[in-house]
Amino acid sequence: MRAIILAGGKGTRLKPFTSTIPKPLVPLGDMPILEIVLRRLAASGCERATMTVGHMADLLMAYFGDGGKWGLSVDYSVEDEPLGTIAPLRLIEDLPEDFLVMNGDLLTDLDYAAIFRAHVESGAVATIATYEREVTIDFGVLGFDAETRRLTEFVEKPHERFSVSMGIYAFSRSVMDLVPESGPFGFDELMIASIERGLDVRAYPYDGYWLDIGRPDDYDRANEDFEKIRKRLLG
Image (cartoon, rainbow, N blue to C red; front, side):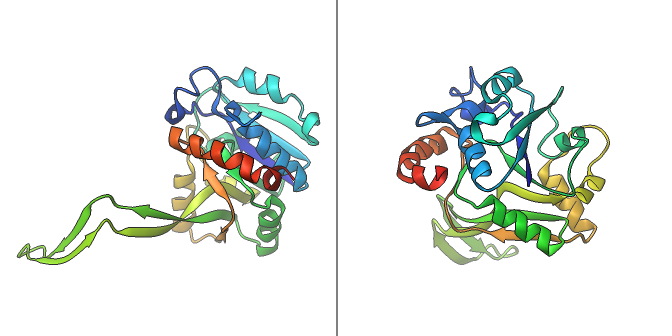
């Protein structure tokens, strides 16, 4: 099992924490976010991880080195320009038939081996880890007839539930046929292209712990949660 870790972004939503260090090196407790990801990958049986790096790449490469400290091999693919979430895979020439791809700023107790195994057994082009999130609309929501404008419905601060991407994917190498030869290309574009072509893309629903550390309030919550679930995350 091989993992590609997307770690090339600038982390602008997490400023000021990311003003001087790349987001994957922002600490939770006594270790960087990405170190937690690597430890979980190694515990799941991952033998090799390739980090796609760009912004402050030297700091990431200096800290993680060859990965031996965490029980797996780490190498790097350097982006000369921002390429989005999927186009960086284009720079990796030795992608295996099936592989994991994930963001480098996630906190989760997902079993990486389980989603990888489910993907391979399904024969799908892509398998997307999904999580159910509840969103609250902080307003009173009105429904009304478009012609008469007569009120037909009112809901105060409704709650909606959505299945969202966790930023963790299992891909078959054939998915690269959808990636253009140059320029940035994102996960959203990949999903739209896959659906348009009728490709077999599967969901992998998960109901354990997951947090995308994208904003300062997410980071605050992650720090609060980390010590409580540290053993579960690190084994």
